[in-house]
Length: 323
Length: 313
Image 1 (cartoon, rainbow over the protein chains, first blue to last red):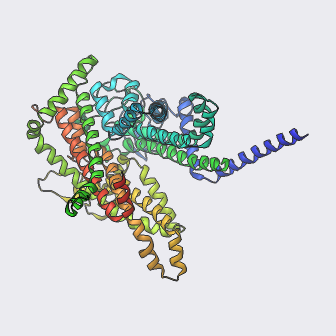
Image 2: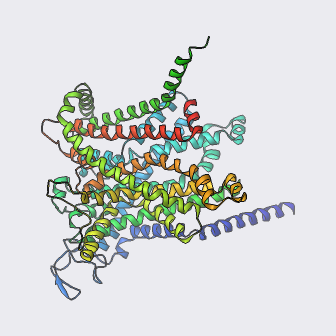
Image 3: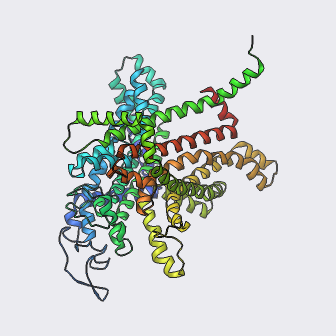
């Protein structure tokens, strides 16, 4: 009878806690907007053929009547082409939807690379004292001084953008991991000073079991929101590289002088960064060529940041309530 | 057996600078590592064996270190020119950020419940995450496609064929670079003001019947303005990180654009790209180090508690 009462009490507590969490989520419009943007992006990445109004590679007619006038491509935004077309008369909305998958995969891969590298080094610095700790922290502080954009640009330009996604992930992921190392290191240091960690050491817990049962549950609420911001930072880097003429799927390297001369690169693979390449000088003639992919990037970055900040607040409240 | 009075004072003054020197030394080591990485990367070419790349990279780095003076003689004109171009826009951007962000943040922080304060907080939140190239595009579109036809006045210049310097060329670049520092200063000062306004001594001052003006400017403001000093290196980092893309968009021959050019091609056939890129990076690094040291020093003078902590280090 007593155990039944305890079990029902526990389930009621769990129910009320999850209800409280839902209430906190609903009170944060930023979190809801961020989640909605992320869901929309995921839908576009998973079902591009269903959502896109046209084939991304299909070229439109050589002339089109828009707003009562016959115009040549690129066509401006209109009822026929909601976001306009590129100079080859290909629908920008369809290309953006089809490009979502490769863009998100690259951004997510870079974020995961940075998180794994930074977290692993932070964990090593926290657990192995002496030379390993000193050198890992020195490496992290050195890496933090290297500008990500310049490093990625340098590596991709010198090795060649035709080398594929692995090069992009490596070039973009080899910088930007230092905050993770510092965060994980200081987080573990803080947790290690807690009494339950001393107790776990006293009962002879291994390093792995300490990580699994004590460190991860306490660190995750801090790390998960930052991971969303990391994905946003990777997207921003991808956008900036695209703007500089470095993008995934380039058939050849787009040089600075060709970009400054206004050359339009041929894009084999619809990717948001690629759609930005070479459009700088077209801003006053065909603004939609630059603004539409840039807005897609901005919307995704905004959504990730909102999601990260919202999650931080909700998880912080949840952790505080747990004590 | 205490040392003579004068000697003690002299060592005391020297000891005060030790933390700053130590920090400067650490930053210089970082800078050398960056230059080494640049030298290494400059020798990476397609299908070249990795050992060859490492050998050429190390050789290039040593060549650069041993012939520093020779290379500097070749590139100092180019680097100096690029440096002053960037210095001008970055200083303007940070100045603009300080000038607008500090009073705005202070106003937001001491009146947090006003609708305008909430709107400002949201705008500064947007500003810290806005991609610089998008901001640059909007500034270009706004001034060229809307302001110019409406007023007939050319407030900004996107390119100039004339040899005479026109300050309107600086306006769009400084405005773009200022967005993130402005947003950062606004939010940091707002948070510091909110925090200071909730302190016990402010409540005590109010309960004593002091006027609101006196409470704000005598008890809140002195605890808030040092935060602006702390924000200067952060704002400088924001500006440096966005410099290449902003200078590329506006075709401004500063360090950011020259770095991108230097990575792709040599500025002159006789100058190695690694040396040129390294000198450009070094000029940014040294400026950052100097700014950090000056700000640390000013901050320590402004706040006696921090001075004690730095000396303890």
